[in-house]
Image 1: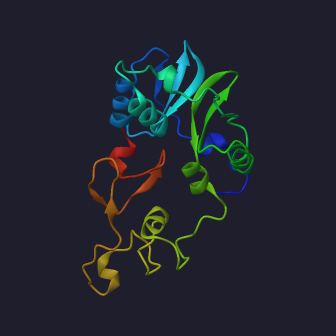
Image 2 (image 1 turned 30 degrees about the horizontal axis):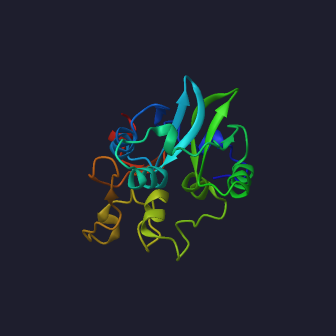
Amino acid sequence: MKRDASVREVMDREFVGVSEGDDLRETAELMLAEGVDSAVVLRGADPVGVVTERDALAALVGADGETPTAAEAMTDAVPTVSPEMTVAEAADELSAGSTQRALVSEGGEPLGMLTERDLLTASPFARTAADPAATDRERAVAGVTAGRGESASEPAADRGGESRFEDQSLCEACGSLSRELSTFNGQLLCPDCRDI
């Protein structure tokens, strides 16, 4: 990705929002069901805090009977970034705040979440597929066969008739094998799952 990419280009536009009075067990179950590691705590439409997996676990382990609410477990400070910030500026904000995630908001309205993973994916220092140190996942994202430098769309017949599965990987949503995976909202998805 280009060095001056904006937060809007790399953020996850979907986030889990809960109310202050929501039961923490239900909040944790929702986070598990949605496959996220945090939930934004809202007062009406205004974000007032964030409940992370760690916050929920600490509050539930320390509970003496009644289940705490999301407000009792949340971290009050909601780090926010603008969707127009560059990736480098957002990385500085997260680093300065010692946080792994920030709410992306514009005019007080929440638009999505930005995580360290989003920033790492967009980093100009991220490994390229041609880099020998790149992981299989990084090569799959780039559409390159693991360790061979060939295009993932190159037919097997062009490789001497070898029947290989090196240029396939699993879709993180449906689990099917695909040669056409691409990153969408932080996941490697096949064309069918991207269209949903």
